[in-house]
Length: 90
Image (cartoon, rainbow, N blue to C red):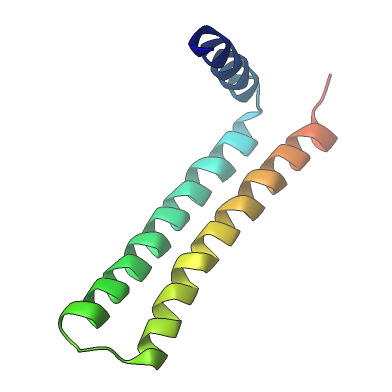
């Protein structure tokens, strides 16, 4: 089981290493944007629950920022992979 998982991860990393430079840059900056938005949303949730009491509107905004960060990450990963697939020069 674990050996099969390691082989699958090695295949995934090998394929990601074959990406073009532009796709790798898009992924790198996309992950940075995701981390910033995720950290901001998490900080807002913690502030809302700890210091401000509980405001339902503020909680909605904070959880929406966290959810949006994951959506942005998915769009960037899928977009970068599709760009690499369609514009790859063989």
